[in-house]
Image (cartoon, rainbow, N blue to C red; front, side):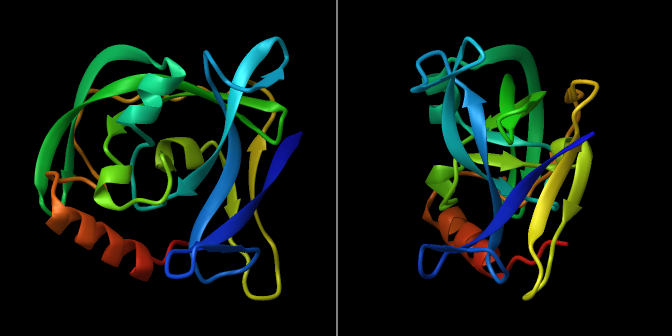
Length: 188
């Protein structure tokens, strides 16, 4: 059995969401949160938009969001490589619900997504996307992300370097590059 979640497209120029491209593909997830406002299945959750990035090897969570939700530091450190160099970042255990029914337990690199001009505090990389099927529709068809509901998906990051679209050092130059990348990015 599969859980299917609709994919929306976010236009960075207008700030609008659409059911069809162009735009950045995003899905809504419920992120486990120690102080979340949504109570479901005896746990607390925070509803967030997650950017689907097929060009990123691993998922990323904004450092401020990781702290806010009480994500647990795994003690792992990875090197994130990008167009502006490389940095080492901590890895956090993250849980989220897809479609109010499928729990995904994963690890995400803690980065400063918002500080580099990213519109969303959670980025789903290939370590999570590979758990399911990403169906990117066209102008006349809907896009979905489907994931098997059994068994519970779990993903872990190895302590290895990986490439990412939004890696690099902080600063205005990276923010500008990230925004340029986001506006011109095409994922399939």
